[in-house]
Image 1 (cartoon, rainbow over the protein chains, first blue to last red):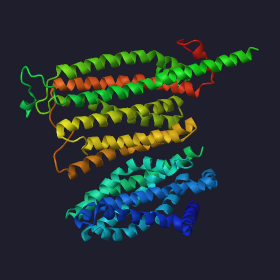
Image 2 (cartoon, one colour; image 1 turned 180 degrees about the horizontal axis):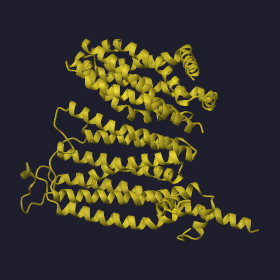
Image 3 (cartoon, chains in turn red, green, blue; image 1 turned 90 degrees about the vertical axis):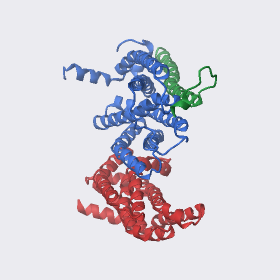
Image 4 (cartoon, chains in turn cyan, brown, blue; image 1 turned 120 degrees about the horizontal axis):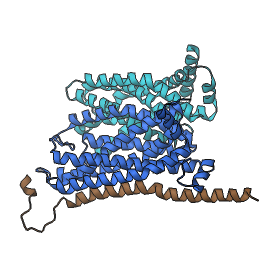
Length: 222
Length: 63
Length: 254
């Protein structure tokens, strides 16, 4: 069982890497969206510093969710998704492999880019570690919870937009915890409660989301 | 603050909150009425459709 | 086969013909109860309860605002329960009841938001304020819209129902967390002390109409839910025997 997990993980990871646009596009999107805010709101450093946590997180959320539509779609279209489901491996485990591959190629780059975005938006330096921590704890949740939405909408025509509509309300808590935490540290206070809550939410998602995702796939491909 | 809301006896002015109250209760009534009427209209249509379908079937099987 | 009358009853309601007939019998009573409670509640609320010392007359909006907000949350909970029953035991009536509940829940959410906004303007000066309750209601509305959207996007009705069931369950698990996070967000961001819910103790004369309206809306939900469920059942089972029999002999117990 571990072999097929690693095999699927490798396959998906390499597939996404080789198709450059699939993992670069969300990053370009992230960068462009973040830069729209100073352009739209004016370059005033105080304003930018205040909105920085929210802007970075919202952009990360959008970039992550928009790239989720592809998560199951290409496998659905060429029939390999059904093959996976027919096998005797645990579907939840295989789903987890795909979600992990997605996070490695979407979430990690977002985390890596975040200091640059923070500098652009004039976020105080002392908040940088908290920003990165919030993204480390939060981007997996974006993938996990978003994966449930992707599984429910795979093969549907409304696709990406419907996926976003389904998933955004569910991601409100981590958006709130993350941005409030980073803002708190930027204002000189502590964010241990926020990070603790994000960690708890991550654990909950890690345990429940793969099962929900697998169940959703079984419903969608029935 | 409460004294602002007391009207002088004999005054004819409308309570300034009235449009809001009417608006709120109006929305309540309109939305719920719509919600309740949808199944009534659909029900009528589907029952008519049902009658036509089964009458047609009965006539066809009776030949 | 079980002889327990409750189990027997539950089994029978699983059959479409019986459910259709039974719900048809219940609906008039539910409407009657709704009108009685609503008339009583509105009379108490609009004419008998005294003018609020601080807010004047506009506080009377709470009689429909609070009832609607409670209903919007209760219906989502019922949908999640029905969804769970539908997914685990594959009971079709549960699917039908769940799907029929969604638009009603969305309607109550919209009413809660609109009435909350109209209450806010004369009381606090703005039509919208991002307080904990209104913001939570807004997110709840998005959850409902997601459910309605997902159901509309899937063509096969039973598949659509199962997908919605899963989404409803995922939503209900998240809902307490969403409420908590919004409340926290609100208390920590607040410059002003606006709280639409109000911390003031409510006088009993104002509490009674509120509870009466809450009960009235439950009967409304019951009546409209069963109406919608019957129509949905008929629509899906157009070609079935029980439907033909119902049309031929309406009102006869199957």
